[in-house]
Image (tube, rainbow, N blue to C red):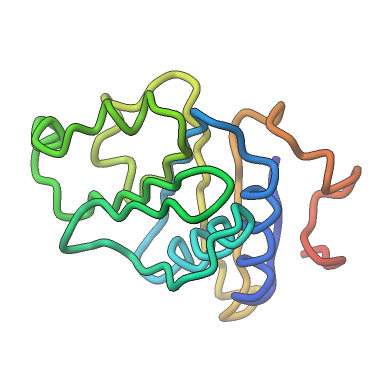
Length: 159
């Protein structure tokens, strides 16, 4: 599934809708260049889970845990991971195979550790379509997209 957003608010709303549809054990790998909106997407996702507090990228801590929503959210930022074996120190398997939902920013750095049921969320810019434009491709379309209807855009816009 590919969705085009035209503002950070639309990227947030897409994340929020996916958060509302998320189930225990879901894992989302976020892939995209610096500044494409991975954290904005995650903030919307967290809100969709019912998490009300601030959600920031856990760049220096690698993992941030939010437990005040309908499901726990385990938010990884693995940008600083040099070797996938470093994830062992964090005990990543406890979270990947737990009862919450995982979001992994910069997931391409640990691709070999991601389970087969992981859904990739690839966020791309296209400056020819505007500074705020994002093309968001989500793998495994069988995931709860009923909320989006038959369209392939967010918030009523098509790119």
